[in-house]
Image (cartoon, rainbow, N blue to C red; front, top):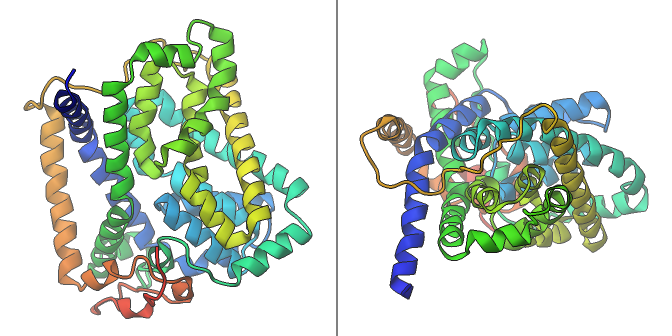
Length: 405
């Protein structure tokens, strides 16, 4: 295989996977944007004052509604912590905003199977529960005080401006009225475009990595690495090694799903896939941000506790789903497709590309471009809001641009 042929093969696989999931990505981001348009971020902090079951449940629900790229969710969690939210609740919010979101579930179902979507939405709350228990043992006293002191320094990480923006509707009335108002359309378009701008590198980077992996790494090698010929040990090894593969892949958010599909076809266990997907919050660049946000000691504890809970959630999912017959017996994730044809996928892609164009046009017509320039703004902007006020243009100048990604 020549280098040119190998590159072409990898790009072809990446392209076919992109075409397969494009409509679902647009649908997921549009639904997420609609939810965010009617949920004000300024109301979130007061609902998460401690690590009680109620606070964690609210944090999980609001996080799932506040879809973010991994970098923005990490920045937003710090902002919530600085404003008075419990550290445990802020971390629950962070996990939910990347691992319990609509678009992730849709892409999982399309590429690998609905069982993985179900496992993700069962395993996510389990991970948060395990994390809360570990935090009560290891995240208290001086370590937590030191983390708060470091967080209050306001050092810039990545996607600070995006995390700080609150573009939700300010109008009163029912959720349906706010969502269907002109201000609701504007707010939805803003969240839609800004969320895409935040994660497109991760999504298409993940597709390219998955394409290269599928094209260049023989499945026979993966089967050996994942102990496929030893079913019991494979189930033990999968959840342990899944997060490690994620850490060094540098891919986060939804971008790790295509690679998860390749790993599943290559022999990683069912629980291993789930722990791999959860590990988008401990990739190396984000670990460095934790160090900047909370200090070295807290960053190390976050890595250890996150890793442990990801592994534990993977084991529980494996143990529960297997007896119920919910683990697929065949490994047929959609990694390659012969050619693009006039099937339902093509028609859905066309329809949702029209929707994306309409939202993009609304974003541009309502002064959205300056907001894109401030996505990497400093954390000081977390105290400001971007409103889609009825009859008013958004005011993106509220967020400073002094920070760097």
